[in-house]
Image (tube, rainbow over all chains, first blue to last red):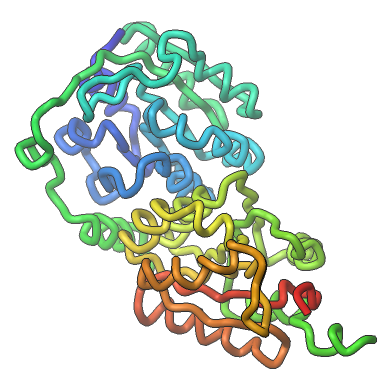
Length: 194
Length: 172
């Protein structure tokens, strides 16, 4: 297993000018990003929707790579989204899945059938032409460049160490440095969207 | 042509409203009576269709499209809209997404006596979420679709068009 922060640190040099939707990795990504105005760290508007949001971004900007850091808890809320993404075949879409096996922000309860789900197999079965799974950081790092050279949609399941939070929500460290409105405003300005 | 067909909301009219208002993507899950519209949309080169398997997915996809400068329309049925409550809240209302949802009003009857709880709760649901809506039944009502688009842009909010007719006089 790898740590989410280490995984994102390994990814960061390969980001180039891609749009990044950091999803559940947002709290680390805000400290690693080199292009914050091309990021969409929206926190969690409604659980289960990150993949759909990223698909929308990818369809609207087929000229730019879109990197999503989704989670297994999110994707389990709507596995049908994998089918929609596969049907649309966005060649610019890279779907990373951070799999910690549990609902970390509610105390670490396991997701259903946590130890037996192969998310790369689910993605491939839904119609993703390329789907991979990595448990170890060095293995992921060695393959990252090649993964990103392939046309999307590419799915990459990553087994990460759970970082369980039990503190009341109001006492947790807030990692967002900008409001959602500001994030969207900066993003649109960066891309010249009126 | 019978009377019902003469006063129905035609799929050609709906497609015309989409084009007039610059829709780029239609995010949809088919409802009972939209097949003719689907065939027209599929043949329209200015539209990209994005099919979903659960209506809540339409909200997050539309949010991503809108934030990125595209102009999506969501086309679903009232049953699916109610299923989508949290996605509507978080992805559309929470991100101030100016999007029109055309919602097939299953169970709607003009005389107000309905036998379908989908109709019973539709408008109550919209009121609870504070989402404004317009009812369209026939081609003469079509300008309300443009009003919904204009209002969504001006208010930076989702606006619903309830399709009481479901295109073919289904509920007459």
